[in-house]
Length: 267
Figure 1 (cartoon, helix red, strand yellow):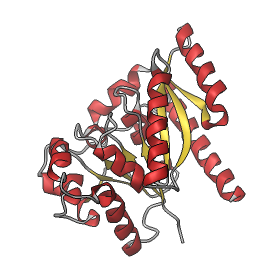
Figure 2: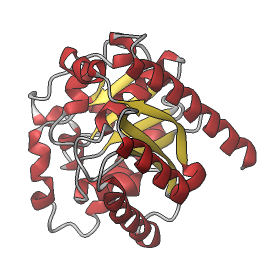
Figure 3: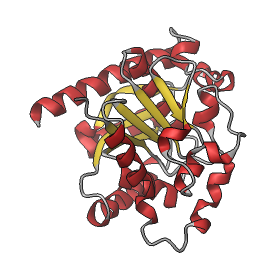
Figure 4: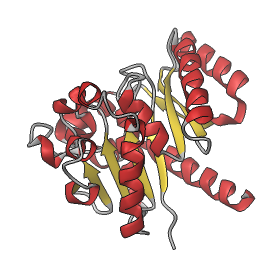
């Protein structure tokens, strides 16, 4: 029986390549015939539009309908135009959830309970579920961390990146102590790398010195095609297979899978 790995793609800073990573890692795995589901947990709905669906549809048909208790996950899963890649979409109404659930003491577990109930009924349907988190350490991010087995952190190779990462690590430690002791950091992915920029290589060195083998070997470069692809509703791996951004995400998909295999054989 296929075990489903639930991975949050997380960084509380915006504009670090988080959604780009969620979309393209999911697409890379789907191209390798791995059944993959993306849950868009960001009210901006960028993973939704980046996979070619609308983020302005009826809120009841999105992750918001699941988290406010009116729908089950299986009722809102949508097929994308890409084989092996499905989506639970998001829209701006999700931003009101924190206020709406203020009286619920168990609200941090809503997403986890929904995913677990789904997997019990549809065991083996997906090998991977990726949760694209919002760019903040809000209730939605806590829900994602409680509901995940592991996390991938995209880290832009720019000034102040490591300070933000330190804050994120403290949050992850608190979640592990209080809410999800099984949560693991799968890896840190360096993004927006500019080899002409001395700062990029400096941040890379600091990250590798501090986090050691947790930092993936693959580095995602700055690349205009990575910015263009979402406006067409297509992952860059499909939009332009040979651009530097695509090559990097193909390499990252391979590295991600290789680390998975090593981890499983060691377990």
